[in-house]
Length: 177
Image (cartoon, rainbow, N blue to C red; front, side):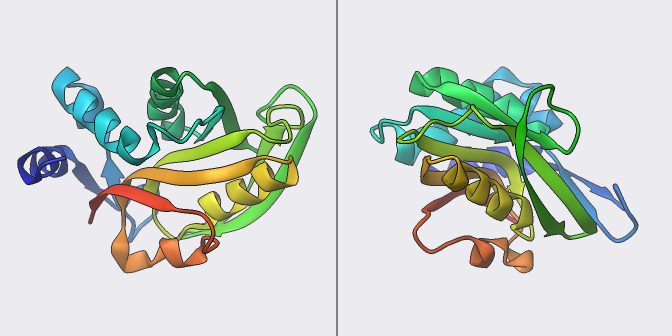
């Protein structure tokens, strides 16, 4: 993706101060979602390194990871797996707890969502401290899936979340803020 397209995407990201907690500078992707040309740019940039990876499942992390993750799955001709906060899925689940920049939480995935041998791309809109992605990698690997990579629209580089992810998992970010 060329520098002009990346700058166009970067300019569309809105920063919302003190959300959801005081001191957090929330990166809001909804302006990107609201413009078809920006949405197309975002999807193309996220897909770039994964087009030929034979991905069978895309795991989207609640909740904004569902939006772009579903689109990535469609473009990759893969299934989509939602990873949700504890208690939100209706069937039996695997669970992992993790630290995030403003507390702790637990995520879950259906026990039958990933099959042994699935080649999995994990997606979320933002990687901050890396806790959610790290927990999601553990869920996928516990279920027998192979994590082919993680794709994030935004990386908050100052929080160094990438360092929490295992070295064997490639990390692709479109924008570094």
